[in-house]
Length: 407
Length: 152
Image 1 (cartoon, rainbow over the protein chains, first blue to last red):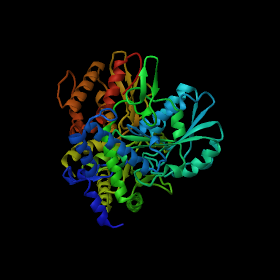
Image 2: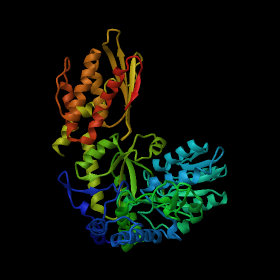
Image 3: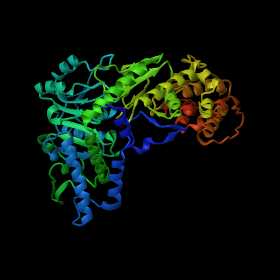
Image 4: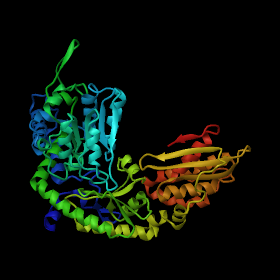
């Protein structure tokens, strides 16, 4: 991959072209939220300017245009993750809502005392708390598979735990705190032997690698638009049709019904049964444009470029005296957590910000991961297709300045 | 390095952060309070020994956090030791007003000269909570004279 192409991609993102505290912005916080390319910003603006109307309702021209654009985005999402049917693509406000939907509509009516929900010690709070809530509601138990000091799942233990009344396994595709790429395909295959339903939290997976839900054979796959260059407030739940069909609606309201009377209500067909109320139309149209952008470049190309840059990031960090990497799994992507001497991550974050370098600091909404490593938090840099080696060099220079200040 | 940054991380702050005064539990404590910043995970516990005459005889703290929150807690223990409870409560109000709203209000018995070192955080809105965390613990501890409290 040539640096020229990377620079060409960078120019697609207007937000990157600015000074922060007098220095050109270096944005290394894509794992928290990705910047948006001009094509996404323009698609949203064009809809707002020219096509805004409610979807699935009106007979007038603008409503048709809005509906076509909104449903067109659903088709692109469907193709992007190779889902068998657009009926299996439920549009949500984000990964968090997608997971809550499964907890409340799939687990809550089915699970009871003696049933187990299995998660891992690597999960984001969004893949922990919804399960804790549904366990409280149903009497089911939440069990947690351990991770090694390198930040890898202890697969033997995970597989052993599957034998004991596990009804659902919820596992992240890529850890947002440690970057660990979990072998979800193998995990799903093993879970199949025990008849376990599997949800994959793909918030950090979809933006960085090709994802094929049929190849994975997952039952549910959840992800967010804003981690993949789309607008905030958009997300997707892929669910196998037979499962979604058997689940009751998550929320009631307009659009999710066929017929309402006080004697009873007939719910709409999939996927609309799960989409109550006026959706985030402009956001979903933006998400469709983000997928167009990713596909124009190609996910393989993105994975290869990011992989190479990620190696440079890790090697560069390792050369800084006093660095301790948190997360050293053999397979990892995009994010690297670290500590520098005994400088608190927030102090590092502030000092780097003053040099125009944006990173994430703290617990990354994954407090159990921090507890596992007995640390209050980390500094975390994440690379994306719009970053380059200069960005990494600026980060390193910033860290050296922090060392100087706290030295 | 920018001036604002150097002002916030001035020597006195870095000194208190790396060598916090009165760090650790206080066996003779009559009042304690926890303070937590859920946003960043900083947490600390403040211990006060208050005499029957309502005077703070000793103060200490323990916890983990950034340089600003640790230095502020350390400075707090130095400031309130020996103060009557009412004056310490005035300190809480003065410090939070000063750091959160930039208002300098003189209150009876309060001299905050040393705490001027914390003024640098005013240029960093996201860090003001770090500097006021320990002071909220003080407020909580004093506000529950009979029952130690946990608060944000």
